Length: 379
Image 1: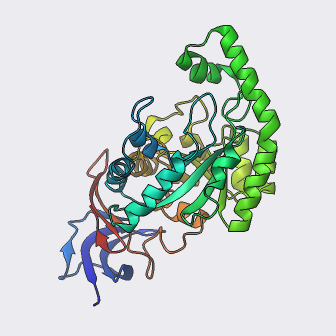
Image 2: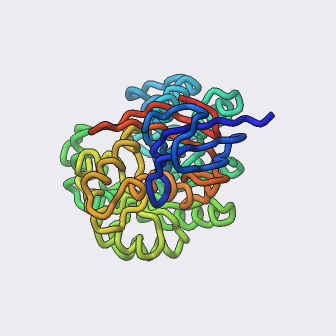
């Protein structure tokens, strides 16, 4: 039986303009886009219709699974709580980040993330979830056990993105010890001697493991056609290394030079939507808004605040010259989808998935009023 929905009197955000018109959804796809209102269907009352947002990097599931140090919540309950917040933020496709590699600074034991992935797959099979969930493996290449963790996912079809990270002091995000002291010494309450020993261990691990682990994981992803992301690139040498690995996505570059070089090499430069909303990086690195002004910001990620992915594009459209709403929305829909090879979604166009968000925004913070995934209303 054909399933059809008509959405009329909407401000439809297309890739190149905003159209006052009507959408027809049929059997989960966008069947027609026309200018002007229709006497049939549901009246959108002049609200925006956006493509469903595509989230490539969120650590938010971890906060539900481990809400306090040492606490583990039920897997299915944590996933459903995460999903509810994601979809009511307008996100219809989400890449859940799972950490690979653990050390004395924490992380998860081997097997925990495998159990989480199995629970995600089961929840989707049981129709518990409203967004579509895929997996992003965040591989801490400087740990000695990252390959053991990664091996548990070698045959998992939900894995569509892998990032290569090294958070050792002197590397990438933590090029200066000032930032590292704030993150580790003060948080862990270490004495000067304890902190010096901790730094030495992390640097030794990075020197021993980072390069061979990057090589092994990148080669595996190339063989499986999985998109690979760099993480916290700081120098032109880091960018050259990323080019050599065939990386498509440059996550959170920490210098203007690295961001410009990554964008110029054809990578999609990703920054945090919270950075846009707050006007600065929480870790003291470059401001995403500056990259937008320079024309080298391609993708936004909600990172640790799901709703920021809806809020940030409106701020960019309001405040950054040369960025209108269609271009800003593309950073959270079209470009992330295409970067990871999801060509069936991410824009409002005939034949694409009917992943849509109805948004009202009289001023300030936008309001998500309804969400559809593949033509089915899910919020």
